[in-house]
Image (cartoon, rainbow, N blue to C red; front, side, top):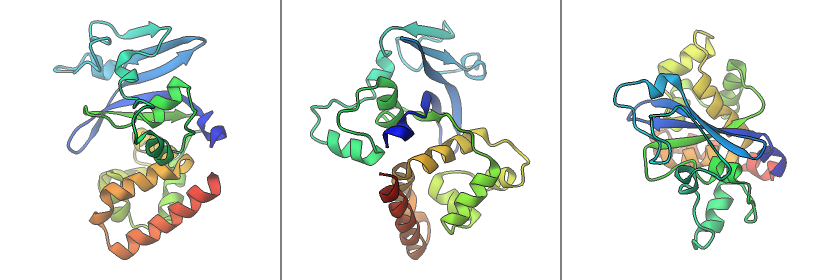
Amino acid sequence: MKNKLKNITAVDIYLEKRKTREYVGRLSRSNSNFIFIYADSYIYKDKAIALGPDLPLSSKKFTSKKLFPSFEDRIPSKRNPAYSEYCKMVGIDLDENDPLILVATLGQKGPSSFVFAPVLHHSITSDDLIKYRKHLQLTVREFSELFDVATSTLHRIEKNKTSGKDVLKRLEIYLNFPEVALYEIMKNGDKINETKRTLVEKILGREQKNRN
């Protein structure tokens, strides 16, 4: 698992709405500094919401020697009785101390509407999406239900009518971290046939076992 974690180069932040995710910005690291940059499409939008009080919309770029509090707050305390379960769910070691990795894994979901997603080194294509969907033996509709992606969007990506950048970034996470895909199945599994859901869980369970 550690080799996969080394592929995490940054964290993308999205504002999750009822049916869509809006790209907010990126947390990265340069030498010993953490850098957060708001996306132009977000910061200049009417009614944009700041990621946190330490990252106001009055500035686009922020630099700090320490992890920004808005990100630090998303990492559960090691004193939390459930910390070991959280680590197991996202596939990291209990003694992992890299702030970027902790934010990218443990910090993915939080009490706010902001969602964090790891940025990995390798790029994924529409062909990879088709192969992955077929590997899981899912129809476009079933994949859409399980992974919260609009059916029309999947069709356009698979036919190369749109780049589908955000969806492919998520796919890269699922390919490298089967436990994250399993978490999505746990949330949305009741939306598809029980037999098919069980099959997908078995496939992903084997992948997780083989990768650990």
